[in-house]
Length: 77
Image (tube, helix red, strand yellow):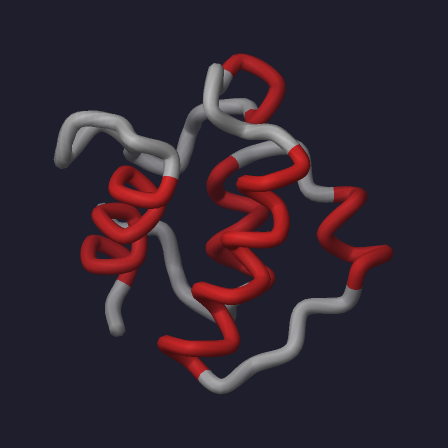
């Protein structure tokens, strides 16, 4: 999964129109970013990439780019 595909998956997860997220957004400004979204993100990374996201690191994430970094994916250009 590349950065573009991952952003599209995040759009879907957050119920945003496809192509909304670019990686520059701050999580606190995203209406759908809540405790359920955090759990959904953890599940997405596990299901699509087979990775376990550490709760401490996720708690420090402030931007969509930070989420991509946790998943080991570069922000698309």
